[in-house]
Image 1 (cartoon, rainbow, N blue to C red):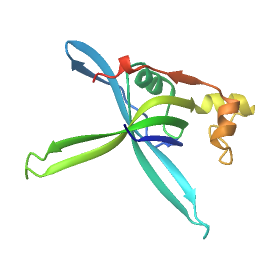
Image 2: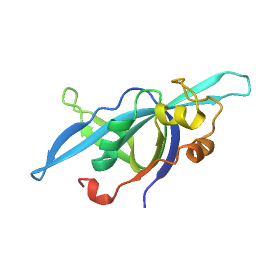
Image 3: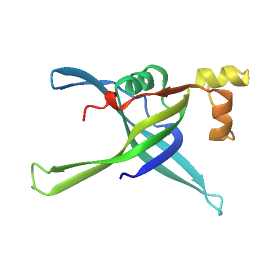
Image 4: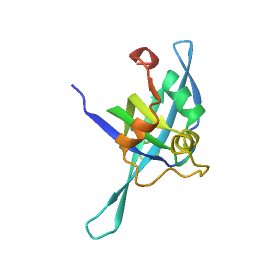
Length: 147
């Protein structure tokens, strides 16, 4: 059994594609962060940041089409990396969300859907409305994951 999550928000930076070797195969991976802003009853906003990882064709598509500030929704499996700190020997852990499915809308696609020339997506558009306007999906398989 594993924990799953669905996260919809904006990319905090341009994703970068990395090449890694595993069993003689050249694999691609990208690690990026999605930010979510939540409005409080007081009118203030609270921000949350989620570490996301994608492999294979999903990683390639994200790096090809997504840029800082673009809206994206991902269905993920929660994963953990564990290791020993080299200096102190203390155990360390990093949690991230491994992409299983994704829905994204680059700013160019949003502009086309809205019929505008602006580079900023409408802030009041919900994830559901975004999906209806820009139905661009990409699904990978477990074969894209190297473990």
